[in-house]
Length: 242
Image 1 (cartoon, one colour):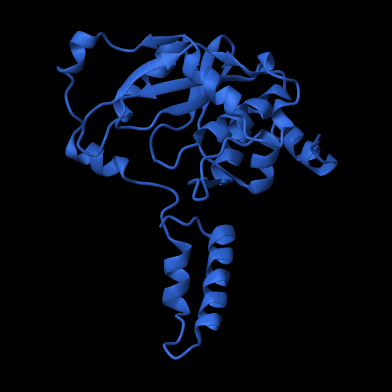
Image 2 (cartoon, rainbow, N blue to C red; image 1 turned 180 degrees about the vertical axis):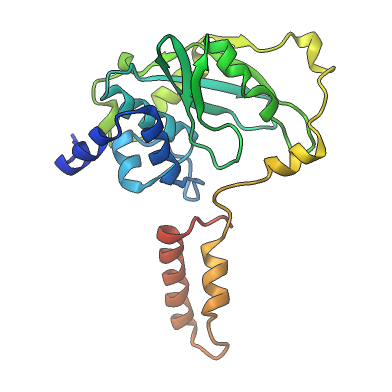
């Protein structure tokens, strides 16, 4: 069974406030799951230095648990044509806040200023829309305390699909009455354009090929080697978005 190294433990202890944890999550590259779907444990997310929203939520919840917070995550459920989102909740002085790992300029960290969970969730409603302006957030889950899972969930080597499945099964609450859905106003054009801003967009492969293109007369074997080198560097220094 894997364990965090002494160096990793020392590093995580320094992330002793929600703000510091969020700053660290922001530094992680976004996991586009190019090699298939993943749900890595906090230990492997930390070592891979990349995460999607659920992996970021799990890592954030684990780090907060080292500093006295219960490891709580919450599922934001969207319509079928949009992506769901998962956030880490924390409470300070009876007010709720949230950590969030996302590739977008919206759906991000929430300051602990919300009186209850629904109030916090509703702060995401107007940001949750498609490129055609349709608002898609429909439900939010009951809080899931990760302490209810196996003690080694934070260091497991396999994917944590059990937690993912539990988020789907746990009780969810409607955000708006069904009768209101057809009456929802679409997001404005300026909001849609702002919503297209992302952190990780540059393709490392495209950049490398443009800077160092293979020569037309190079043998196939050499081109294959060069291509593999491009993939290697794109994986570790840029997020591949092709």
